[in-house]
Image (cartoon, rainbow, N blue to C red; front, side, top):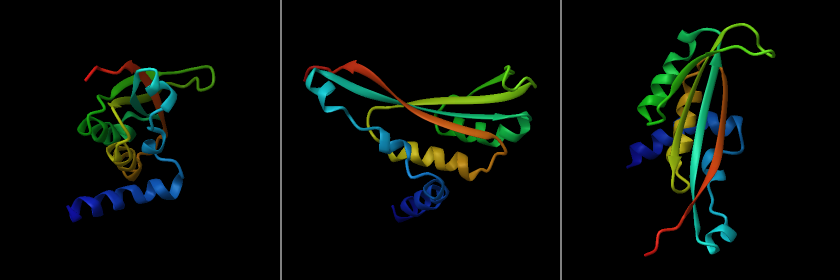
Length: 130
């Protein structure tokens, strides 16, 4: 148990140094929605973009190992007309979970030379009767 806690702290240290907000901070139920009979699932999406596919391969493996089902795409846009690669992975959580923070910290710790973005989205569903 102590090993897991130590590992989580070491992996999350870069995350804490860079950002004050971590994914689990955003995964809290909305009381008004709960009263109306809705529960919330949380979707954590992690995206990486790079000019070289090999630059983001280690992070793709991390996302796959953590259940994010990463998808690779080749893309270009008017803002960035040169061909570049994008990996995006999404995982659903039913409540705030330190696993989300650890997954993001692991990707950041891998230091893939890429642009990293992450979002947490809410997905409402009716609560099941007990």
